[in-house]
Image (cartoon, rainbow, N blue to C red; front, side, top):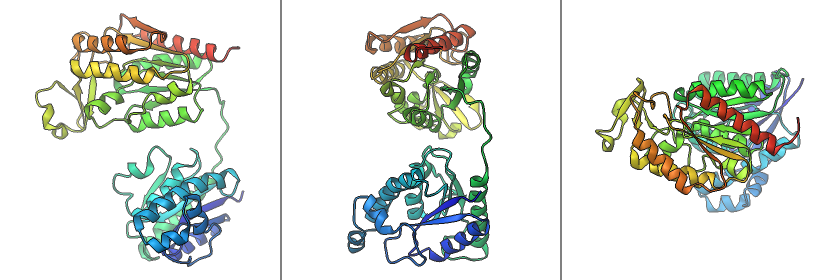
Length: 407
C-alpha cells in the first residue's frame, strides 16, 4: 500500500540532499510530503508545506526571522513551529512517517517535530550528531538516529549510501503492518534488577486478572517514558514499586528522571500503588566516575559499569518528603506500601545495603508528610518477598475496580 513520508528540513540549503532522498522514497512506490524549515532563502526544491507556514505556527513571521538574522532565534522558532504543525498534519492524514537530514540545528528542529508525534509513527533522523549523546534531541520518543558519517553537505560517495539506506529504513518501517494482538487494558510497572522478583510476581497476578503490563526500567529514560504514557491517558493503572530515580534526582546520580517523576498518575487520577523500591541506592557509572565528595560512603558494584551508593539517613529522610510531596497531589485511588525488611535485594537483613536506621528515616518522613487520607500499609517483609508482590497487585486491582466499576 502506498504511504506518504514527510521529509522535513531546510530546503534552502539542503535541496540536493532532500531531492535525492525524495527520489529514493518514490522509487519504492511511496509519496513524499516536503516540509520546509529553511529560513535563509527560497527553497531549492518545491515545498508542499512552506517555511512561512512553519514559522507562523511557531508564533513569528518568516520575514521577521530573516530580517533579524539571529540563528538561535530562528532555530527556536522553527522548532516550535514544526512541533506544533507536524502533529496537526499527521492527525489530518497528510503523512504516515517522517524523515529528516541535518546537522546540529537541523537535528534540533526535526527532532522537536518528531518528539511531538505519537509513539509508533516511524521517525528517522540522519544526523551529524547521531554518534554522540543524543538524549537531548530524542528525549523519550521512538526516533531512529542514523549517523551521517560525513556532514550533510552534498550527495557524495558516502552520503549517497547513507541517505539511500536511511530512506530504505523509513520505507520499510512504513510498509510494515503491525500484527494484531489480544489488546488488553494497559498497566505500567517500574522495575530494576533489584526489584525484578517483586515485579515479576506482581505481574503474574495482574496478567491473570486480564491486564497487559508494560515494564519500564527505572534508568531515568524509563521513568520519563512511563510518565509520558501515563500522562497521555494510555495507562489504566500504575505499579510504581521502583521509585529509585528519585534517589538519583536528589543525590546526583546518573539515572534521574526529573522533578515530575510520580506526577502523571497523581495529577491524572490514575489508580496507583507506590513503594520505595531501590531508594536504598544511588546509581553511578564505573567506580572512577563517582564524585570525590562521596568518598568513604558505602558502595556496591552492580556490574563493571554501574556502581551503587547506599543512601544515608539524611538522604532517606529527604526522599520520604519528596515522595510525599508528589503523592499528595493525587486525585485518584492510591496506596503506599512500605516494606519493613528492605527496599531491594541487597537491602535485606544481612545484605550489603541493609541499614534499618536509614530506612526508618524514610518511613518516618513519609508518615509525617503524607496526606492523611492516602492509605499507607507497612508490611513486615522485603520488597521482593512474594507476600509484598501479591499485596501490591491486589491493591492495584482493587483501585482499578473502584475507579472503573464493572466486571
